[in-house]
Image 1 (cartoon, rainbow, N blue to C red):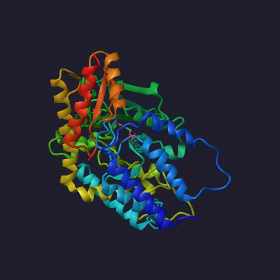
Image 2: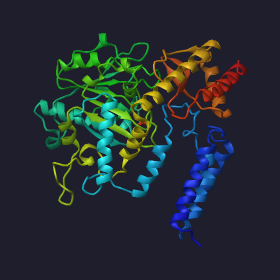
Image 3: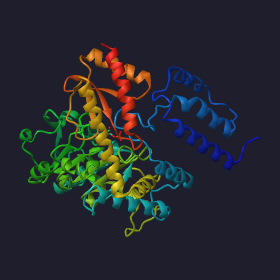
Length: 454
Ligand SMILES: Cc1ncc(COP(=O)(O)O)c(C=O)c1O
């Protein structure tokens, strides 16, 4: 007998609650045994379907134990936020609504929530309120979306309509990037037809910031890509100064601010991104530092028309009312989930002060990690300006061995990286759930493992 929809959804929510309530006490990385269990998933598609509750049970019993504890408080890998309970709850409700949020006429509630959430984001991030903006999957697509608008705009100024004439034969665009450009921004450039060899690369300083004394002579049309929040060090380019220089030749300045843009929301960190509002476009993630569920990024563009002209489509069957903001006029996707719902819920529940406390609190915990590890005699390779800490436990072989054991041991999870030729462990504190106690527990495990591995 198949259970009812109500029973099925209740079962899913009970399983999810149990998962989240026990995440604090379970190991962060899944055990070898639970990984091996995943092998049972590799069977052929059955001819006859299986009861929904059996499907759900398989998912929970086989897969829950094999998940990485990213929703928990001691996952410090990559730059991975958790998901605030209010954002998870709102996301569940929005999933039940199943609103394809491309057009206002068909999805008035979620389209309105998106407008409000975008206005709040512009406000909290201190960006011009007249920006065009859209919800996308993450910073990769936000970079793509902003750079598509940039390409459209700088070519239009050079007398070329890329929508009509395509890109073949268009005036050459000078693309200037920092040496530390994130590979996803480079991928976005490739998707837009700019190959790696076409990039003019500006050397970085020892924190990973673009060196202003090494900027090339800029020639119009030009797009510059700067960064707020280096993925290793957390450092931010001098974007105000870069914009002042770039705008003298009419260049477009894009900011990849996947997590660093959030420094704008924290009074004591704002100085790191001073003048960032002078740029022309900004990409960020909400699934990182706003702690909403995946996937959630935002593209902001000062030149609203350029964004709209590069993204909007029309068809006889699609609603057409230029006086109404349709979400899909500002994103590459037509059909998509209502990403703005989780963002709206997180912002409303935290308020301006709550966002500042969450992000500022993560930064303070990162400093605590760095200070304790330094006091133990380990080398911290970066100035801890945001939430990123790079620690080295001696040579590359020893550092790698220690990181692997930390990951296996399961108290916490930190990743490996290379920073300016040196192998290091990268600690990224990005979750709302992380407390001082979690940092203490993690430090005890890290130091014990590091001491043992001489
Ligand atoms: C600076 C920077 N840009 C872009 C990205 C890509 O973000 P996403 O994976 O959300 O597309 C990241 C991810 O860590 C990042 O740190």
